[in-house]
Length: 573
Image (cartoon, rainbow, N blue to C red; front, side):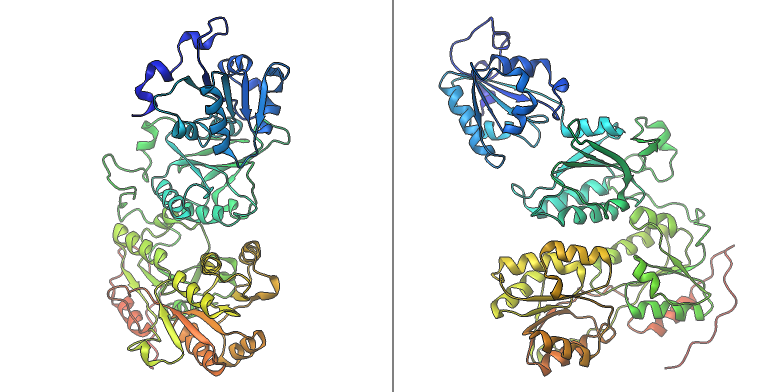
């Protein structure tokens, strides 16, 4: 039976709330003192603090409410920040001994705070009364400084994985983004947890526009307070700490001078063509009418290319006389994109909402992203189905088919955890040749598998944010190569010999991705090659670029949408 089943013993009466009406036995007040400004401490919390015989708190919170305390009369018990469980137990013990006890927490004690720990350990039946005194949360305090970003439905999400598995945090972040809720991020970044916030922000960007209005507040209502309004995309370049709270808006959140706000009314929302229709069961938006074309890119073939062969395909399609929009995700991608008068670069907003708007009226979408880029491939397939735009996929042939067992000196694994376990068992030095996206997951799994002390070398694209994340994880700068591939067998062999590499981890990227050059270099050095198994190919994918181009030319032209002059003949093999 839970404590709430004993209202006469766990909930305060009016006698508990006034010092002139004493009650026999102990009493426990769970006191919320808000963000740190004495002016924002509720009156009921002030009374509970002044009546208490014992005050239990983290010492920072006591400094905020010091004028309300009487150390000559009251016993003050402080425990370090990480000893929340012990603080709850001390408070319960003192109340059980008959003392009026106040357990103090910042914000609201019932939100990411101490109240839950107390109720977990309350004896049943409870021999003393308990009251929970609400307060101003970090979410509402920060929202008040930013304007009114939480006027409509919103969620809060703590990024601390001390008491919650990181996989759960990412899962919840993804669903918050899909539902397009405004969101408040607590415990944003710590010294030991640097990368998590950026992973969450990228999950948000998969479903929210890059220009989504966001706010950052540090030390709300305390000394050195900082408040600013920014965008979701810009947050990826920020640094944070545990004193920072991030507020992410929804698609309707707006800026107004130095403020941000989310409209309250529904009527204006119904007129928005991207608003979900009534009764829509899934968070995805309904397909717009085909006539709603994006004028800048209407009638063009969109090529999404995360690989060199994808960029070459974009240039070849333009050479066939079809206007091409080549989507690049980074400035590095733009710098290596083909120079052709028929190829127009798109470096605009990423994410599903921005792509939905941009792809309206496209002639076709060609997905030439990396074979392992499952998230973007799934997103493009869904969008094309919604928009009724033809979807064509170019899939690099696998280097391991038909029989990977016939290739000596390598093993094929299903995921990074298995690769890390194998590499840790063999010992270092290890060379990770899978790119920046896998670095954090591999690094964590490698250390968990006992790889501490082993040398790990990585090869990453020369982008400042990519390199900064590698260094933040703890990869020594001398072990990081910032280069653009693919690389020859001779180059791999020379680099790995100089580093003394014993194990190489790579993807099945096909010949275009330099897989054979890695395999032959590893064999020459008697190094073991661990290959991440490739995801199943998209049904109907093309392995021959020329066959894909022929299929494009066979598509009917869109009505009233101009196409450049007639196609040039395809080159012969």
